[in-house]
Amino acid sequence: MISLDGWRACRSRCRAVAGRLLLVGGLGLLAASPTPVWALSVQEPLSLKADAPASYTVREGDTLWSIAARFLDSPWQWQALWQRNPQVASPRQLYPGDVIRLVATDGAPHLALERGRGDTVRLSPSVRRAPAREAVPSLPLDRIRVFLESYQIVDPDVLADAPTVVAGQAQRLLSGAGDTLYAHGRLPAGTTLGIYRPGSDYRAPMSSESEGQGSGARSLGLELHRLGHARVRRNVDGVGELKVLDAVQEIRNGDYLLALDEGGIATQFQPKVPETPVVATILSVPDGVRFIGRHDIVAIDRGSADGLETGHVLQVMRQGERVHDDVRDEWVTLPDTEAGAVMVFRVFEHLSYALVMRASQALAVGDRLVVPSDLREVVASGGAS
Image (tube, rainbow, N blue to C red; front, side, top):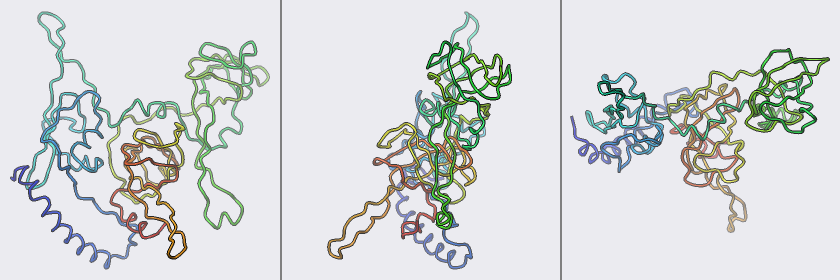
């Protein structure tokens, strides 16, 4: 057993020796391996913050990410640093009042947990009961709740035969909860449907061969925003009469009625790194902000088909600027720089939503996202796209 202070004192020397060993071993691995360099990934060594606290008491308003960031330079290494406590049933669920301690075992840092008791509420002169406690969320749910509950990404063809709102009661242009509206299309009486409004039609450039054939850009999916729900009262000659059950926004002519799956959405996220190389691009900012910063939501051009899962963390690489070389009279592009990190919180087949967890500078649409410590990043820094 080595003390935490002793571990910190020898960390610099260990890093230097480990770096030389990794370099020699890594060169040997690359020389012997038939696998392309870009297809390999490495496990990043734990990087503990110099001012990491010896202990921290979980507070209301904390998130798993903010707690991890107190101990680690790379918060996505949270699971690797965690030391399971056999006396606690769910060690990755943290509650206000819990105490996290940083300890060292055999020269390696780990986390240990002491469960807090929480507040006690007096119910009667002879009975005391501890109220149920809510676990600390992985990230600020208030920022992403609407995207978890109300946003869908679908194939644009879904709208081809979908019923559409054609009128409100008494020719109203806008309708809300409790109102009657009319829609044109197949609307079986008694069914409950979601009311949706189309948003961005996300597209990615096709390959050079496809572009040469004039096929244009392929669709990654159409964004739909659910405005509310309505129940079909009756249908006469293809025109349905519906009652609006709930609405978060005014409903107007041209909105669509669809029966989409609204269940099975994750609300708990563990920060983790993808196991396979991923290179993605920021497509847009659904919130409509110009400069992207911490806790902004971004849409990225990778999804479940590319191996992404909820909780995956990607580093943001800011695009290098184009500058002019006055000596050689030519334009050059500066290397990309690490500018932040995002966590994926909702995944569709070819597109995902992610929350910016940290940003050292303003991010922008078009910035690349890479797996932390992925060897593809090394290749990309040499000029690969």
